[in-house]
Image 1 (spheres, rainbow, N blue to C red):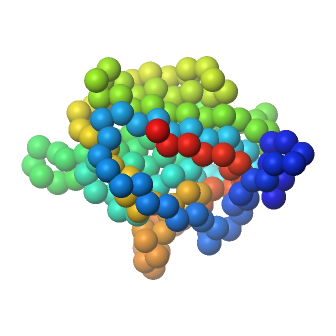
Image 2: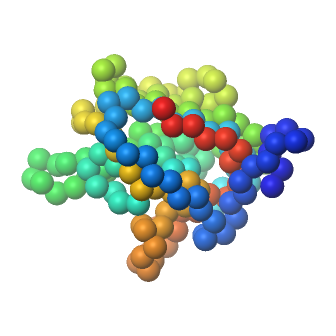
Length: 172
C-alpha cells in the first residue's frame, strides 16, 4: 500500500493472517530496533512490531501495548528456574491524535550501558535500567504478527497482529 512518500510503498497489516517471516541468527549484547510505522487503530490488545516465534530466555518481543506504549518484552530466567517476562515500556505514544500518521519508533538495548531506551521521531521518550543482564536473540520471527509459530490459538491474548503500515524496519 502507499508509504510515507508518493512513490514509496509500505506493507499494510490489517488481519491476523498478515505477517512477514524473518530469521535473524545470533546473540546480541546490543540491539537497536527501528521502524517507520503508521498505526491505524488501537485495538485494546498488544500489537506486534517484531515478535520471535518462541518466547524463550533472551527472546525479543517488540510491540505496542493496548494503551499505545512502545514495549520491549524479554523472557528472563527466574531464581527458581521458572520463566518470567520483563518488559520495558515507554509512556503512551499513540493516542487518537497520532492514529493514521507516520512516526519513527526505535528501541535500543545496550548491555554495556545497562539500559533500554525508547525513541519517537528521533527524540528519547524513556530510559530504564536493564533488569537482568543477558544477551538477546531473535532467530525465527514475524513482523506485524505472532504465529507462535502457527499453533492453534489458546486465548485472545495470543492474537497480536499490528493494525497499520510499516514502510521501513531496521535491526542493528
